[in-house]
Image (cartoon, rainbow, N blue to C red; front, side):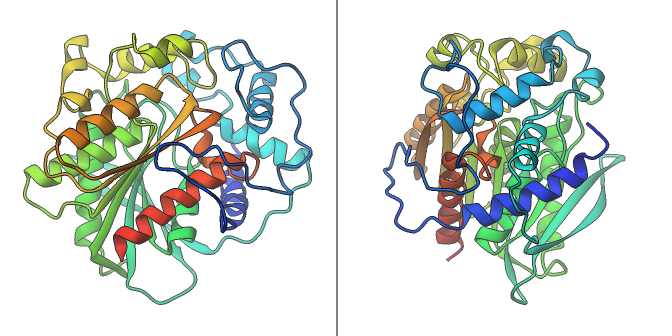
Amino acid sequence: MKTNLLKLGTLICGVTVLLSACTSGTKTTSTTDSTIIDSTAAAGLKPAGPAPEWGKTIKPEMQTVIEKLASYGDKPIETLSATDARKNHTPTDAVMDLVKLNNISIPTPKVDTMGKDIDVNGAKIHLRVYTPKEGSGPYPLIVYYHGGGFVIANLDVYNASAQALAEQVGAIVVSVAYRLAPENKFPTAHNDAFAAYEWAIKNAVDLKADPAKIAVVGESAGGNLAANVSIMARDKHIMVPVHQVLVYPIAQTNMDTESYKAYEKAKPLNKAMMGWFTEKYLNTMIEAQNPKISLVNANLKGLPPTTIITAEIDPLHDDGVMLADKLKAASVKVDSKNYEGVTHEFFGMAIVVPEAKAAQAYAADQLKAAFR
């Protein structure tokens, strides 16, 4: 990542949280929410060209982000080594450049952060803990897992999402920097994810959190990890999260679904990238059928109430739908919403993408209800 990414991540999260708070009066449905919420920040952001062939229904604000990302001229991730892919610009970079170009003011974050290294299986991983500045606790506790296909990205790239959850829910958020592939193959990220969850439970009181009110949230690969943490907690007979929020989760490895076909060439995530991620993380392709990777093949009974968020223009759209159906078949309570006209990675873009603001508010409302 670029050297100034930490600073940019910190800035965007404050903006995201501020703009995500104004959601009163928004009409939502149980399956889709394409409501545009007025935002002075997003006003005036107009795409330079026509909608891309792979996303004719793309919203103008979303398209502006994609155009900015394309303007950097980075090589396609699926053609690079993992080391070089991590140097590419990210959607967070594109959003922050739009923020600067449009002179959008950045408020002071409403949380304090601290870093913590913990031991996991003979190694160490880093956690970032977000604590609300308001109140004295005990706060609810959220363990958050970032995306990136188990291979790229980091806590800075997904800072906006983690901080938005902390501010809007009024919860402590523990964001987990699990180890990445190919340096650390399957199931390293899954084991790290669970170790971080165990650490959060054991240290909840010291964090000023309520250990009886813990949830897991993840985006993309992180959505897969969050669901696996719930499964592992159930199987190991420790406290199961009271709720899980899975944002466009990786739920299976069949790349012949309708959304994979329709959005094969979408940005910022396409079919070729998903194949690249899979090859980098797995030891052999036989592992693609492992229920930890293909959640739709897992035993999902006894999992916590679940919120699933999907994006229309996303190869992983059908993964989320399939997982929701499998969870319901396992008698798990599921709420889900699909956001139209947006792509994979939209969730953290509330400063410029109104659908992201609505999705964050929806996730926050679901978590607050679970914690009550």
